[in-house]
Image 1: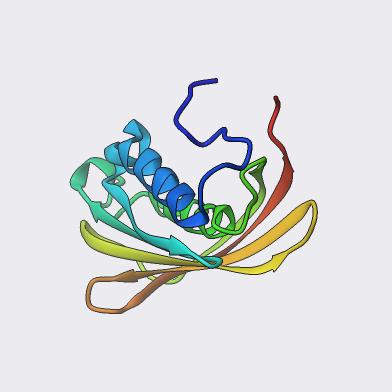
Image 2: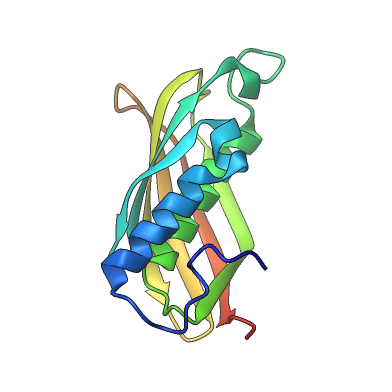
Length: 150
């Protein structure tokens, strides 16, 4: 496992840990490929921005549903990550998305919110909006929470 500062045993403050998470996500080649970056996270909430490019469109010129699914999954996961202990991790086990309108290249934003955080399960919801505020998609995610391997 690479050492990105996220595998701590609990040292450091929560804001420092969230900044490490934000930096790690924003440096990820996957997120960079999709044009996604974390704008804000904390207290069970997250805000992602996606500068959606033509490289993630389908044959009809609208954004591929998988890119929107990644945005919803990421917004949900990061919202939950802001509520985890440094010794915990979470993995998506269920993702449900309602695509309401086609999305096109441009600036999108996704907000994530934890609606339940138990000992072993987290449930979150997220929305994606076009730059003009139009709602494009809504989704929910379920994560299993476990302890990090030592």
